[in-house]
Length: 215
Image (cartoon, rainbow, N blue to C red; front, side):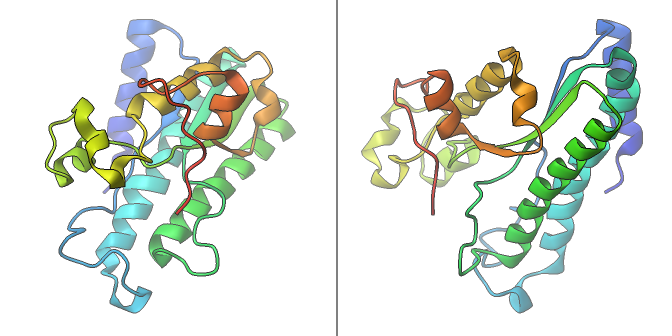
């Protein structure tokens, strides 16, 4: 997948229509395609390489492409901006990786974000890059997997979904970060939505304050 031209056109359109941009959240991802067909928990020698390609191309690479155009189209000229790359919690994998492909690319997101932050600091740019890790979100695909309609408030009747959080929960974390005048102090680090909820005082849409997610 090579999509640079489309991303460039998008940023140019934003500049024409809005004139400025202050926040970019890179949340693109690939790799869950055919998850039922090819065992996601299989060892690396049984994993299809197409899954690796999707994760790195539609995930990690997409985040870098978007960040580069955000910089060249807006942030270098503005001398300000916030880049948030979504990833996963810091203890992913532990002593036994869930999926070698998945663990590798998600760790790469965190490493890339740290390196981006060092580049920004070395060039004395007032642009902050950080990584943000949600928990297990109730996306449309998750609702569908459990036979529910998207947004079904009755999800709590399914025990496995008790630990899930809404997609709005990470959105509230993004808002909190964007409104924090000291957000630059979080540059280059991975921050978990559950920890930020406690720090900034927000909750999920159902009033719960979901803690950082762990497998």
